[in-house]
Length: 331
Ligand code: PBG
Image 1: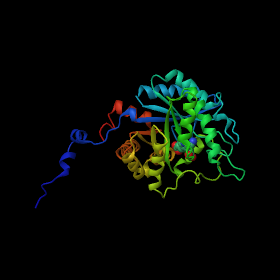
Image 2 (image 1 turned 120 degrees about the vertical axis):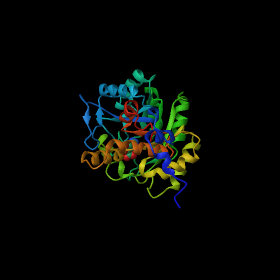
Image 3 (image 1 turned 120 degrees about the horizontal axis):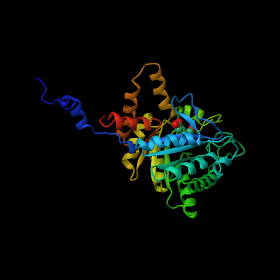
């Protein structure tokens, strides 16, 4: 008997596939992470992330203009300071590179895009950990919360509209929310990097921020073996008042992302991290993979799994493809 039920009917032509596509990318769903470095006279390429650079303030402004022209939803800023110390002083200094870049970009572009900042100490500490340390070298959770509170106020005062809490300290959302409110910054929103796994995929990022980390982050970032714990972390951040929750990395954690998306009553984001970017770029450089197709397929899959918004180093490029070729508009 020939089949009467034929799913292939809806795949027969490009217009039909476009009509029935369940997932579409919109440029406003894409957020561009950007690195701004202190003391550079021109942008410096990041060798493990071909196409990405450490920006000067001027080159960052040009990139933000390009992102706005492509209708990208927002930018997420990371600072690369020249001086680091044990407590990450540069993070709370209003003249520190991240706060200076935030003020510079928010005053110019705050009406046209959402300027967001990474809130974590690792870029600013000489030991490279996301918090301050006990005498024995372990990360002191509660002393770190005090530093995060000060960092949050500095970032809000610089003009950041959305603070990305990426340090994975217990109680960080609650603590930062209380500090912001007490300082009159009730309007500053919090993005919890809620389910953040201790991943090898952050490797290229460490070059991007000149990280001095030796060792690992396994006592605060999550074990890749644990799915249930990802949901638990997201539920805790929701209870603590996170305005948005995030899962990170994205592609290897789509199960966690789907769990969080099913349980969350606030927007759910995902971070397609440096290693996800580097793997595709490296394979494409060797001619082993169709780069542009894979970029769109990966972002589509992250949205399909439940992300409302994706942080991705391809944000501007993907958004420009939507404008010029419609790629990603059908999936
Ligand atoms: C912490 C932070 C990291 C990333 C974003 N925020 C590094 C880490 O946790 O080791 C990684 C992003 C990427 O790999 O693209 N400040």
